[in-house]
Length: 261
Ligand SMILES: C[S@@+](CC[C@H](N)C(=O)[O-])C[C@H]1O[C@@H](n2cnc3c(N)ncnc32)[C@H](O)[C@@H]1O
Image 1 (tube, rainbow, N blue to C red):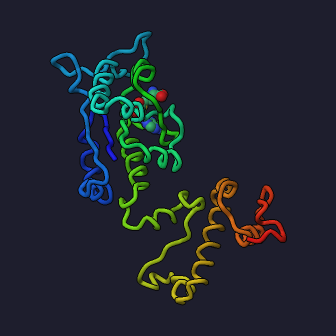
Image 2: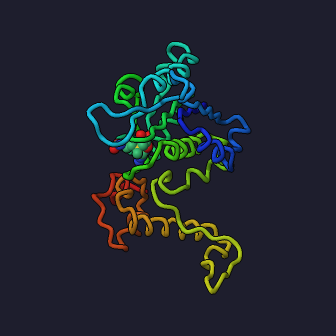
């Protein structure tokens, strides 16, 4: 999968993209990330990419011409039909909330363009003319879209088979699985008086699975009860949650007596 990032600060992204899972995914050709410096598309000797706001107000605005031309220089590499399928995403606090399902959806595309805003934001004609989607990574304001682009690339790349060593692990992750993940432990078995639960050292895989599932349900109920409304829950899950005081909106047909689990 090909990511194209348009930014005024390519160096802010270059280092993190070389590290760990993203770095390995790039080396193995599972993803490719091209950083395009928007300043290359400016029209004066000073590389002016921003200007004062019409109507007054503090904060500079990113000019439309360099962004239009930078986006077009990328899209023209994708012939006809293919071009229409390339999402051109503006990172923006005004965008749709980024989520696992948005990451899954973007991972279906063969290429994604990510435009990083800066200063007070981008000229509105960029949104009208070349952006197909605006995405926010949360209800807070960053100084620039570079951290947001990195978040999006990381989450989307994880959806691509082979990027994370075991795809099974990805499916067990919090949110991806529909729940929050159970607590994790590694060696040593005892550290500063804190011990690993006996069940995890018992070798009894059925009991381990049950413990993990219950911990996961317990944590989700405590921290993110909203997730339970959409999660795929078995009858046993529902019975366990009810012992914790959960009142479900009503069991699905498969969970009603006589309908099996
Ligand atoms: C200081 S912000 C501009 C905010 C803008 N004045 C507003 O009120 O919507 C500069 C840039 O950072 C990026 N940015 C800031 N917060 C973001 C968020 N929560 N998600 C994604 N991008 C964000 C956007 O690219 C934005 O253009």
